[in-house]
Image (tube, rainbow, N blue to C red; front, side):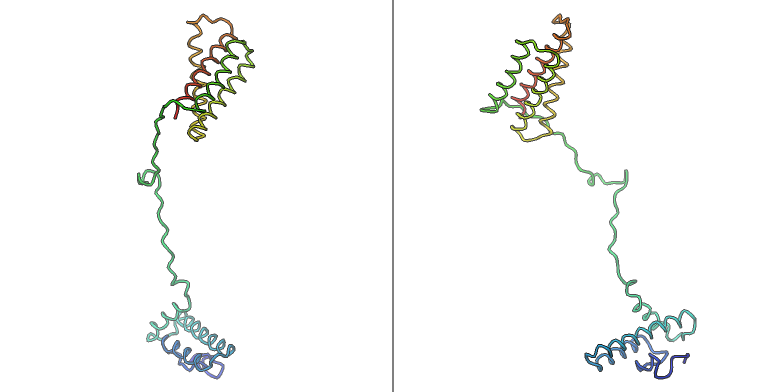
Length: 224
């Protein structure tokens, strides 16, 4: 026996096992001692401490090359028991698709929804007519300044967005058609400047504003 393995202070002696006892024998001795001491917490703690000390001593012997070949398999079992964390199996981490290797099914499908057109009814019909009609009359009859025309176009765009939002409830869609009507109307106005023999910048702004409001009115009444 190695020093410290004999005598009453040896954990081997307190457990009642020999130096070359197998893992099963050490574990059985601990179980027997725990059953014999009952519910005494101090006695149970001493038995657990002796058991751990024996396991650690067996590991040290094996690392130092002092353990017999007959107890190698038992020492391997002791090493597993002394390192329970090594026995835990972590769940496998799923591999994420990278770059071109990603499956087409892993990418969200992109689809463009074609616009639907139908004439509005009830309040959705006469409210845009009243609102845009008032702005058109302001532009055509009162010949406002360029700064006022900008405010009128902003009001017309806002009314178009609100009407479309009220009709189908899609904010992005309503904003898209509101600004699209503004852009298309101003573009048509720029194309019609020469055929209409428009000369002054104010008249150019009036033509573009009038066409923009008309296009926005049509969109507010028809985009579903």
